[in-house]
Image 1 (cartoon, rainbow, N blue to C red):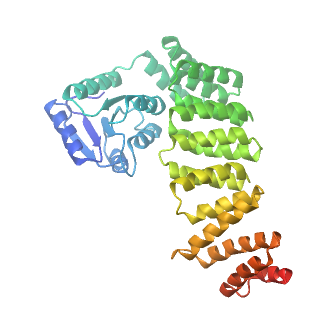
Image 2 (image 1 turned 90 degrees about the vertical axis):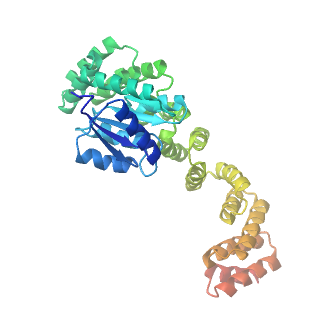
Image 3 (image 1 turned 135 degrees about the vertical axis):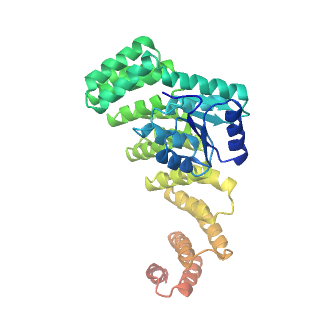
Length: 391
């Protein structure tokens, strides 16, 4: 039981002024007797492991470890997982609701905070923790039975919870998970589909349904539900990269590009995602999509000679030799003017230019480039071989 007067509260926020404000609100409301502070999720996690805490008030956006990451660690810990957690955020309400559906947030508050809102939320979730309803009791019993290996007993408890809340997507999702454990995939699929039909903001069930189909080799449905999940939340981006790679390896280029493009669109770090996807395209010899992606990246970063070089390779692989030569020559000019470029990079570009000139039977142009290469590395084997062939 949590006592509102004597409970220990942990406030986790990267802004000192916000921590002080929340602490003062708790004091004025006469809630709690011990209040601890942390500047990020990692610091908060250390405190949670060192002292008993009854309630955590956690900011969503923080450096080092954000609020959702901290919440995930809390929910995964056998001794802390039932602790009430309030997430505080300045983000849009829709985004918070999506994260709440995925991360089992007890309550959330939008900034700027008010004394009344904080008071109402704290009292409500402490009351719920002290007086769990029939659904909460059934869910905890199901969890305990599952951990004991009693899957049939856990399923029965989930059924009890569904009798109370037949349209709760999170409970339906759990029913699906349990049926997968006993190899009843048809029932699991039906539960997953009902959950996504009920809750349009349930990204995690869509993600799990995608994994369900992927494990069964149904990549079309796996891709469909993963795109649906990404449309709601960016948290499935790493899996989107994996599935896109797998689809490319199986020759399903259109579906792969749809998934990877959605991953870029939803990524909070679009530049990093584009780099990762480019490497996936190149590793799978998908030079058409690589070319299109590179052109977009260069529109934003025309100074990056490494991307110019990669675009040249893509054009070369696609058979557009003239375009490839233009890109390689542009990259070569950038290398000459760059203090950061390496000798290896310079030779790598020049040898490609020399090959193209040789194949186009432009003898003098090829010889000029070969001479440049041999001035840098007189023992370069391919350059020496091209010189022999060119004479």
